[in-house]
Length: 130
Length: 90
Length: 93
Image (cartoon, rainbow over all chains, first blue to last red; front, side, top):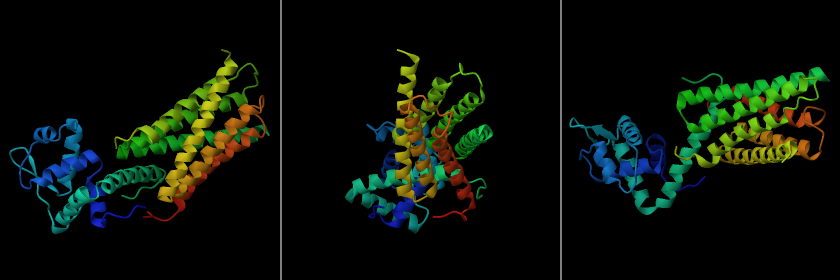
C-alpha cells in the first residue's frame, strides 16, 4: 500500500473524489471560495477537459451532500466547507495536488479500484448490513 | 457414475446462476459497472454449463454442442475481461 | 475452415481468457487480501487448465471422464468462497 497522503485526505477522496475529473471540479471551486458558479460555467472553465453535464452534476451533487459545497439561490454552487476538519482535509488535498501530483493521481485511482473490488466481494454476502 | 456427473453438472449450473443473481442484485443497488460485466460473464458461464449438461444427458452422439458452449463461455469472458481491463470510467 | 478448426480456435481463446481472469483475480487478492478473490483465481485457473487439457488430449471431451473433475473443482471453489464469505464475521476493514 503506497503511503504518502494523510489519512484525512484519503478519507476525503474516498467520500468525495471518485475520479480525476471530480478532483479538477473540486479544486476549481476551492480556488475561489464563496464564489458562486453554475454547472455551465464550471464546464466551460474546465476546458479543454470535457465533462458531460450528467457526470458534472453527479460530482456536484456528491460534493453538496458531503458538506463541501453549498447551493446558492441563483442556481450555482460555491465552496464552503461545513467544518474545520473538512477545510483541513481540502487543504491537504490542495497541497498534494501541488507537491505530490503523481501520488495523488495514483491514490485516486487506487481508492476507486478498491471501492469496485469491495463491491464485487460484497455482492456475495447474502445478508446485507443496513 | 452418470448420476454423479449429472449432480456435478447441476451444481456448476447452480453456482453460476447464484453468481449471476448476486452480481446483478448488487449492480441494481450500487450501479458499479464492474458488477454488470461480471454478472454478464456468469450468464455466459451458466449457458456454457447448461449446454454441457444437455450434452452430457443426451444419448445421441450426433448432438455436439461444443461450438455453442465455447461461444457462450467466450462471450461471457469477453465481458469480464472488458470490465477488468477496459472500463475505467468509474 | 472446418468446424473442428473453429472449435479448437475458440477453445484456445477461452482457455486463455480463463487464465487471464485468474491472473486478475490473483492481483485483486494481493491488493485486498480478501480470500474470495483467491478462490476465484484458483477456480478460473482450473477452468483454463481443464479447457486446455480437454482440447489438447484430443477426443477426451469434457463431457466424459476425468476432465470433468477439474471443472467441477473450479466451480466448487467458487461455491465454497461464497459460503465462506457468509460465514465469516461481520464487515472486515
